[in-house]
Every structure is written in C-alpha cells, then in structure tokens.
Image (cartoon, rainbow, N blue to C red; front, side):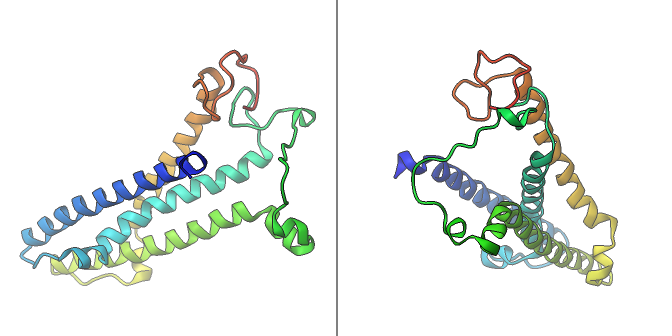
Length: 212
C-alpha cells in the first residue's frame, strides 16, 4: 500500500498536520483578540465553526483550486518553449501513453458520458473552487460581523460584504501568489533540473526541449 500510495499518504498527512497547526494557532490568536475587546473566549469546537477559521481555511482552498483548474485549462491550448510543464510545440511529438488494463467506465459507455469524462478534471476543480469560494464568502462575512459587533458597529449584510474591498483583498492576495508560483514552476523548469522528479526534464536535456 505504501509503495502504491506513498505520495498521496504523505501529502494527506502534511495537510492534516498543517490544518491542525492552523486551527491551534488561529484558536489562540482569535481568543486573544476577543479577550482584548472584553468578549468571552470561544471553546475549540465553537472556534472551528467560527467565521475566523472558516474564512481563513477556505480562502486558501479557493485560491489553490482556482490555480490548478486554470492551469489544467491553460496547458490544453498554450505552450512554453523549453518548459517541462508544457506540451511539446509540435503535435507530432506528442505520444499518448496508455498502459494495459480496463478503460474507465465512461470511456467504455461512450456518448455523453465520454464527453463529460473528457473534461471531468477541469469540472471537478471548478466545482471545488465554487464550493470553497462560497464557504470563504460565508465565513468571511461571519467574521466581519463578529468584528463589527466587538467594535460596537452595525454588522454588514452579505451583499455589502461581498461588495467590500476587504473581501476581495482576501481573495486577490492569494490568487496572485498562486499564479506567481505556477509561473515560477513553468519558467524555472526551462533552465533548472531536479534528478528523478517528474516535474523536471532529464538532467542532460537541452534547455529548448519542451515537455518532460
């Protein structure tokens, strides 16, 4: 099981580790802020349901799913000469690798199932992005309402919050960094190598070689 699924298991473990770390640190920071404003601190379960935790969590998930979904779509039609992250410039150089084994069920069924399956990866990322964006918006709104009440100000409506600069600042600061990271990966793989990594070209490959 480890040999077949080691990458997924390690990534899942790291995700859970850092999510727990975020929850613990956020719990302490938020309660410090509540006490500073004369409010009662939250218990751990209440914090996990609070706008502060929900907004911070799904704000980041939203940007990750946007990044990966857009990357999947952009690499369908766009190329970057010399990048390991790009399809070859010449379509004749592309060779689909299909190992022995049964084809996925939608492929065997054909028709509309096959058409849907052909775009299922991008559709899945789009759905995850929309779900994360919605939860980020809801959590951010609840966090803003709580903050305004602490300050003795009237809490904003959901529409007011969605139209505010603060909400879009939360999103855009993550979106821009995600696309910068992808840009760095695309460009750096032109000139740099990492032995045995599928994200890198072979060490001996010329810089102009496009694709992995």
